[in-house]
Length: 233
Image (cartoon, rainbow, N blue to C red):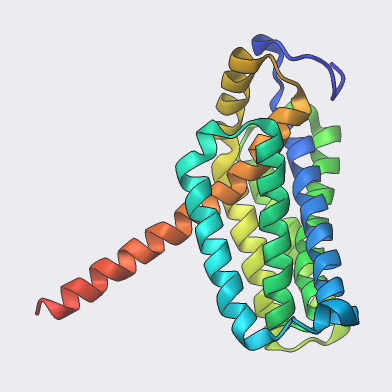
């Protein structure tokens, strides 16, 4: 079955979906690096790019985007899902540009993107062997190995290490947690719209972002519960 061919429910292959999802996620990291470069290098952008206030604005924008994604993901058409996927990567690239240097941003997003690109190659050649949890573990090991090799080779400080580790663990774990639901959603999307593998992959990549948004909301809920418990004493 070709990547752009028509799907039929019994023929939806996890391998094909994972390859394309990983490629979309890797492309998103490249987009984030490009956006950070624009924000830090081009004078016309740098004039209004003041890191202090922009950090707050971008964090609010990411929170609102994640909230909308959490509430309306099931209603997203493929064009809207693609737009939201681009939006999340653009906002992330801008936020990283506020926190890190261009080199640090390129490092954190580049290592994460390389993890997805290598995982796509592994999934393509491994075929049906990626159905178990070993593939998710391998993805994490690839990301952590790249983090160690690059940071040791460049003699980076703690901030760069933390940035890479957070991105690799966050994306690696949320991707692993999304796999079963991604395949189910792909079948549901086909049954509803008779769509293509690429459309399913776009929704699958966005679901990884959805899982991260859900994680943030759960952590906020936990923090609120802890604060309320402390106050009630």
